[in-house]
Image (spheres, rainbow over the protein chains, first blue to last red):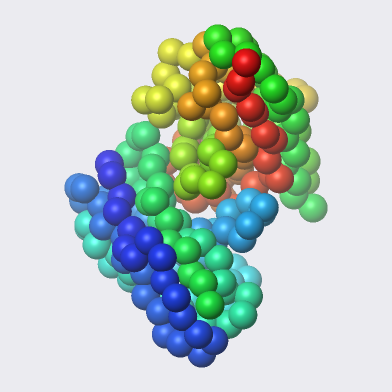
Length: 105
Length: 124
């Protein structure tokens, strides 16, 4: 299953509302997770089951969608949110990731 | 405190082999499926392989099937990735990752704890 993220690159300012889209090449129900990765660090899970917030993740992050189209939304971008975001499908093997979206100032 | 720590990376010649290790602590290792994920320099994430908690079921990306083998030693709380017939395309940081909750296999379940990664460089 291929995952296509858009945009690949996003320029935004602190306080902006941003949305990242992930499209699956076939239906994956709600078996989608979102990760944040900062340079030189391991990924960190933000959202799983498409819309469930991982414990400890700020509520400004939210996820929506099912089937083939999903969205990660950051309601008010904070300085620590500048990073690369990846979606991951967990519906079938092989598990796959989207190409990533880099969020920069 | 949950920890997973990878080791075993390094420089290897094309066609060579390497075994990565992932030492786990702070959780009941045998209850959790585990995965290996890699990231080539400047590139995105690629899931490589996964294994059930008991070790009887294994799963691979098409790019490594037949060359890589994932195994675990639950008596030592350690996960391994045996990599054979390596090529330049296998150059990457390799991460070990733990399933977020107890399940039979890595499917359906995200990874909540990741190691710091170990760099594998395939070059002559």
